[in-house]
Amino acid sequence: MGDSLEQLDERHEYTNCPICSAAGKKVLYHLVAPYRVVTCTACGFHYMDPRLREEHMMELYGDDSYFGSETVGYVDYTMQEQALRLTFRRFIKVMAAAGLTGGSLLEIGVGHGFFLDEARAYFDYRVGTEMSRSAAVNAAKFADCVIHGGCSDLPADSRFDCIVMSQVLEHVYHPKAFIERIMVNLNRGGRLLIITPDIGNFWRVLMRASWPSFKVPEHVLFFNRYSLVGLLKQCGFRDARSLPYPHAFPLKLVAAKLNLTPPKRLEKLNIWLPHTSLAICASNHV
Image (cartoon, rainbow, N blue to C red; front, side, top):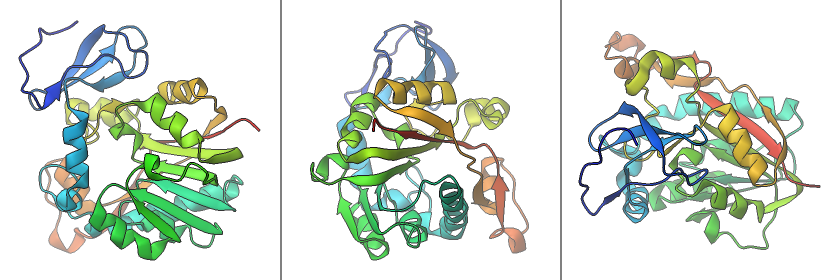
């Protein structure tokens, strides 16, 4: 089991593996107490244990300050708008080259809607969901429809040719049920694209417990390509393939993660970092 278990307050819980439900685990990293990253001894999946109980996490996501918090959430999310748009613009071109654009698009967890806006010329109809009310209101100007809520708030009879989740799956408590629910809204032969931090990348190996994607308390799942493709297969998807996903970041943000201070004149410079996230595309059954 690894380290002995400490007593938790009522807001936190220990959990079995979210992928295979096995109880056995070993500690990979200790983070800010009481959080740890553990590895399932049965299937090798990495996850947060203990974790904040889901109902308390949902309160965090619903708070309008989530996209501007100094502790949890995203510090001045709109400050990253230029870098995010550069990232999404490049990735949508990758999608187009791979034949993954056209028709209708659903994005789960749109934030302020920058991806939906950049996708405007590539899809006929664009819909999104977002847990933060203020972010959903802002995103609505960039899409045909933005729903305040999650995928369970989508009409069961709505269908899309492409569903995208960018930096969402690492927040999900029940990943198999979540993806199976999304399948309800995917057209036959539709494409699901998942972008999530890659625990198998060299940034995590280099930074160890200081890896920025060990984000307490929100990130509870940590995938590599093997575990993500395996989950998609369990859910009935096929033809999983990787897509390149370089990510632009403000230099100021990158420097802060490395405890460095860049010259003020360079703070708003955006730099490209490779291999920070996985981007996996898969199709459901035709």
